[in-house]
Length: 351
Image (cartoon, rainbow, N blue to C red; front, side, top):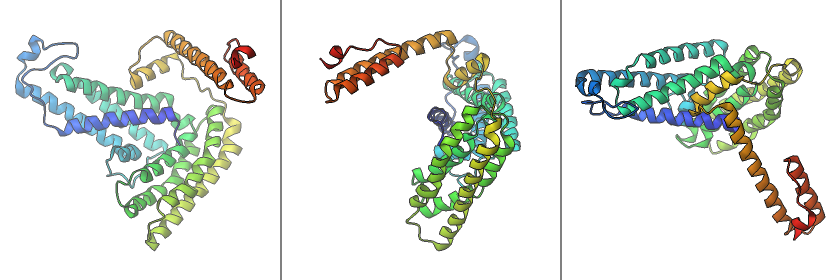
């Protein structure tokens, strides 16, 4: 499955898009006056005519609609997560060509957002515009600079696993209908793993190792969990189609694992570090954090040490409730030393 942190970011971005989608379906606000993000209405905004303000509002809503439509089209799994089921039988295009098409669409959307006159939008629209621009920036940064599609072998196996998971996680349609859509997605999954072989270039060794650690669990998900989720489906033709599609996915997993072990791992010598400039952009686009990195590191280490101390103190308290006190004290002392802390004495730990 996806890395928890990456999944969390995707969920936040998906929810933000859902809020925007709802907003774009509403009628424009009363636009007799507009408000700047920084404060109250100024003279120029009060002087703006209602038709002009409404035109700016409509332009933003149309741009937002296009961004959301393309997000669903290029990322069908996100669409399903949002409850938009027009793309349930589609799979992300993992090919290099598909990535470049999405980049081109994002660049068009970013230019359209930049061309909007923010001062002519309502306060809520200005905030929505900023959030939308940051979401586009984050996706562009990922595809053009971080480039997990070239550096992260697990993106593909965990990606298609998440695609299947969302189809069984929620009963948004009867099981036969969801299975029919999943079959359509599964038929595209072997090509996704073939695209991975073409796309991946000199990934960090740790990324390939993680993919190898994850792949058996992802494969087992298709072998056991997915069939069990549709055990109540009785249509013989549908079950036969699923059996064929699912078997092809399992075979593709096996082939991909061999390739990771025998081909990619020996040549996985890339650097996993993003670099200061890219990391700062990533923090701003994804979290709106612009705190200097050295200050962030200081805060993180301070919090780490606080939690390490709390862990050691809690472990020492547990010693009082176990019979094998010497063994427990040794474990607590080892934890303390690994955290760079002074271990508690045996008398302190067991008293």
